[in-house]
Image (cartoon, rainbow over all chains, first blue to last red; front, side):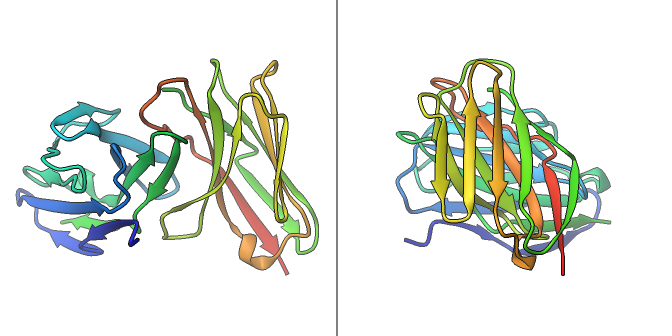
Length: 112
Length: 111
């Protein structure tokens, strides 16, 4: 199993640009989440999904959209990038039966 | 879902010493998990302790759970330089679908 994969690893955007951060898992986990981590801070939950076709907002959802058309994929879309969205983004999936959360390696995003 | 609060926020010890960090939470849990994050990397799941367990071991890690005090501790014995990282606890409520993380404990192991 590849586990949780994220692409790209690094991205630089200009203010106002849009992009999609990709996340995929091959463990057939129902639950997936997106977090952001700012320097020296803990993780903050952006959006999460409890299954294909179902998504919900986390702590800091503004400026981000998600969709979950398949169990495997959970892309995060930045609609109009802002410097405040400069952060490291982590995708994670949960083995519902045990509650263990598996994390991807992260995407480092800089918005100038 | 609830967030765990780690204490201390930062801990610096000499290599070979034991490191203890604590976690408190507010409401009943199904299990509590500890994660490690090396600088610039994603989180790695270390250990999961269920609400009906009081202590669990994994290699040099020992986790305790006191549900009456709503607290957990992570002990790393015989610390190594490679243990330098941030450590996060994540309490999981019954039926919860996501984990919410606090700011973690930054552990530094000095050679």
